[in-house]
Amino acid sequence: MLEEKNRIRKIYAEKRANMPPADVDTKSDLIKKHLLALPEYQKSNSIHIFIGSLPGEVRTKPMIEHALSDNKKVIVPIYHGIDKAPSHSLIENLDSLELTQFGIEQPAEDSIIPADLGSAGIILVPCLLVDASGNRIGMGGGFYDRILTGLSITKIALAFDFQFIDDLPFEEHDIKVDIVVTESGIIKI
Image (cartoon, rainbow, N blue to C red):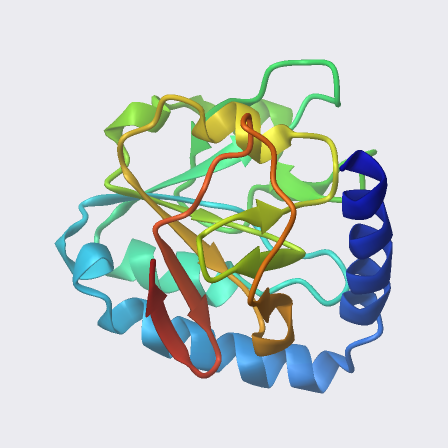
């Protein structure tokens, strides 16, 4: 199972990384439009969202800016390394972001405002792939499986159309999402 996941992960990580930046931006704008129309988003006073900045990843900064302008509390994950538990921070603007040694953006150490993930109404998660049953494959470190374990809030994967496929291999510890948002629309699982 792990070999198959890693094979698929490699193919789609490469495909995602090779997306032209203009396509990433255009399709991310469409994803944002669909997300903002979701009743789950509209009803939520607080959202947990990743900061999409890896090559070919859905761009979430405009979504963060919109949520902040809507007076929603915005919580982002803080990654401390593959063997360390993640933490979470409120974010009040995008000015406090810095590029980490892991190649991702997150709030600078001196601007972290500890936050409780359980206070979020929805959680927006990245993925390399997601299927029609809500199974997702991420980058392989299990970061989001650790975050999502035990959460009863709505889990929403943000992905491009090519990342949504019929069926993925999954294991018992894999956490499913409830909704998928792509540039073509909303898929409720």
